[in-house]
Amino acid sequence: MRLFALLLFALLLWAALQNPPTAPQSDAPARPVEASPKVSLRYQREDWPHWIDEDGDCQNTRQELLILSSQKPVTFTNERGCTVASGQWLDPYTGNTYTLASDVDIDHVVPLAYASAAGGARWSRDERQRFANDPRNLLVVDDAANQRKGAAGPSAFLPAESFRVDYLRIWREVVTLYGLQLLPEDARLLSP
Image 1 (tube, rainbow, N blue to C red):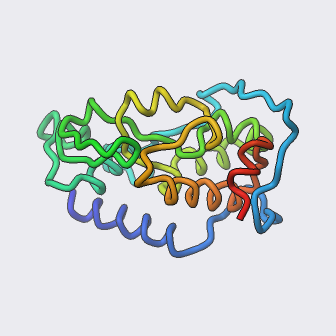
Image 2 (image 1 turned 180 degrees about the vertical axis):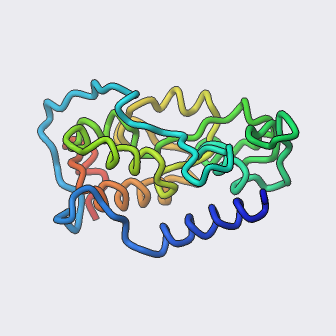
């Protein structure tokens, strides 16, 4: 059953990466749009349902991403297999490898607070949930690096040099797909 659930999640992830998303705004621009420089990054995290168990297998988005991105088979905290205990993850932000699930976070590359300020606050709860669990915007990273990043855009936080091109590509794709507006300094950095 667990293998079936993993295969289903992998298939859903593959399909999400291959097909355009059902974006909250169908008239999203072809490139990132610049927002007013007076945007507030205040938001209510509970308004962005994340780490949901969409397929009902007891593994939420965090756990499924940990399973799929581990370079070794994972272990679980109990026989039921809902919560990952260990595996092996390469953090693209720092280049470090981690083996304990408690040492890593699942980062929203485009942070929820940033998305909220950039147009997402107007979305429905379902649209915010879709964004908060979209695997195209999620990475397994060092928890300390994720905390340092916070709600920062790419002009205020960049990962290790070896991952910067991919990091900026993810930012461009996510803000474009969801029709989000960038702070001026981020728009300049992400302009082609």
